[in-house]
Image (tube, rainbow, N blue to C red; front, side, top):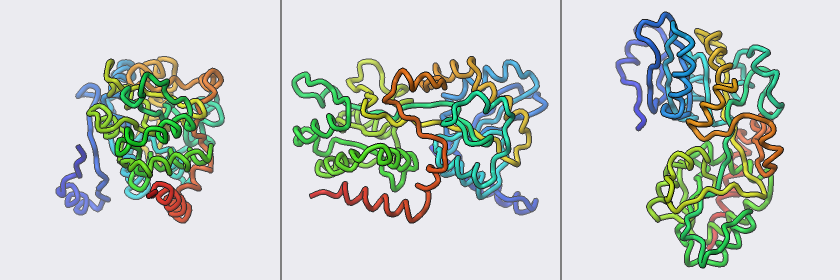
Length: 346
């Protein structure tokens, strides 16, 4: 549950002549010993439960360091750094486009050379922003969505055919992101459109079948588990892995025409109080040990270039200036108008 910082903090900040931090916090936790001489501050969109094993493993070799972990939504995280000057030593987000804008607008400091040297070009932007995790954006399908033991769809063309051929089964039981309110949903849709025109045909079919629009992957997963939905399109793979128990009757499918692969990215803000500690944590996250812990805790794939060679349908969202173009207000309005028109079918 989200909560705003209490008004008393606003008053104190005003009295001290310092800016109040008004961004909304989803959760907060402190790791490490009470008597630590330094405290590393991390702002992230990743759930605390996912990050906890990483924090504990990192601090085990840093006896005089504690870690304050603040979890926030991607828009609030961006606002904290861009608009409020919040002081954190490491910022981690799933919103690649917003992270790219922070780095491009001068809010990220240069990273040590060893942190970027080994990463592929699609996993870094200059020496300011790097990828620490990758996860596919998947199709969720209930077993009840496959009449008479039919094989599950392996491409968007297959999915379109399945929905068209069984309209009574799927009417009102398809879920996907509402890109007007979800930053992740907007990012995934714009990437879909960059890779293929099939998203527009799929949108038309979903519109005719009264698809439901959601803010979050978790809500779509809940709809599938309750039986209200049969299909969830563009769901984060990590949330599916964490919330679909064995025997749930729901399967996650990486579509083989292409599967957009999100990169969770990290930067060290220019106003970081402990930038060296932030770099040390980032170095650990990118190490073999950190990647293995992260993969086990979250289901994120290990950051290795060969992943895409052995699974060519996985298409990483590249860290390049193209991410910034989708944030342009006119481009966004035009894209959303086209999406709404495609979805608004009689």
